[in-house]
Length: 110
Image (tube, rainbow, N blue to C red; front, side, top):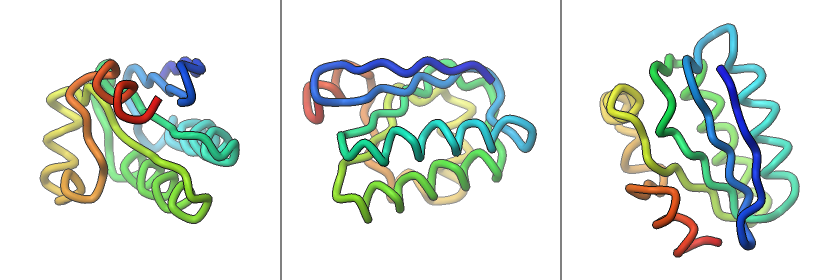
């Protein structure tokens, strides 16, 4: 998994790329929680995610919970089809705020 963290407007954008699985999810978790601790809106751009397993999903859920506790917004954007299927199967597509694109998320949050 590769990642890039950028500040765009008021938001922090974390772009994930590749597989978010058992071997990479601890890194994803650490990166996302560090961003959430800053108390600003966090957008996770998932356009480049080719695969996500339950450990990767758990990292997203934990980050969402942390954001809620911190009182900041947390959203997913541009979710790839494979990742969206997993979120849909877990019924988490109704739990997360999801935007079709990074630009749409920034327009609302950033």
